[in-house]
Length: 243
Figure 1: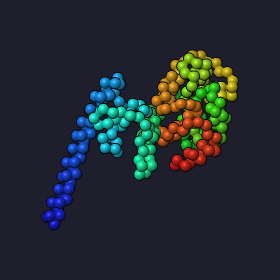
Figure 2: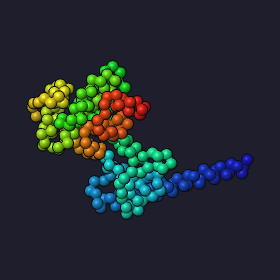
Figure 3: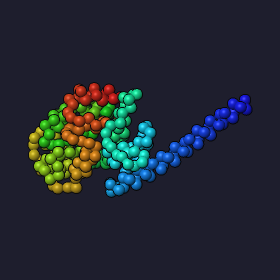
Figure 4: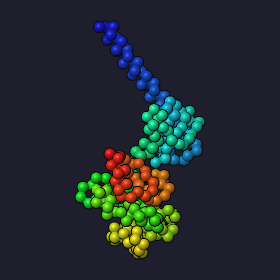
């Protein structure tokens, strides 16, 4: 009994010692990586964390993820996958970051079409007034809302700041009734409004941070980014499959 107890105690002590050593090594590597990055990137990373791969650390700047060697000599971007499970570890991490960033947003900056009755799902859509598929998605708004889907719009004029599309969507956000203004603009109508302190620039920056390259771009509650248009029924099936 005493021998068995000593063995268990020794195992616990060895495990604790290993944990301390690993923590010290990680701390040293994180400091080394931060120092190396500081030489080439002015802003500090939001996080530096060990990955499942020995000697490789994940570095995040907003919703952008890089991988850096523990000695701080090499940096690369790309996708990290677990070959055993097939899981995309990079996308999982990015989804988590997007989800957190959206939770931090002020809902007053969004244009929201609420679900009819019980809300089953909620999606965030980066949209452009002059985008044909964005208008097509908007034409299915009533059906999406009826299916229990709440849609939160963020502005993403693809032509950039100062463009005609930018001015159109800024007018929508500055309108007294944003929902009516969005409906009018999506239907090809003209919306005029007094200039205001709108969030279009910050929405554009967020979209770029998220990796949006076109519109519509849908972000699910999990933070997963779905590029392109989906008809209401296909969208509903996708959301149901994610439960």
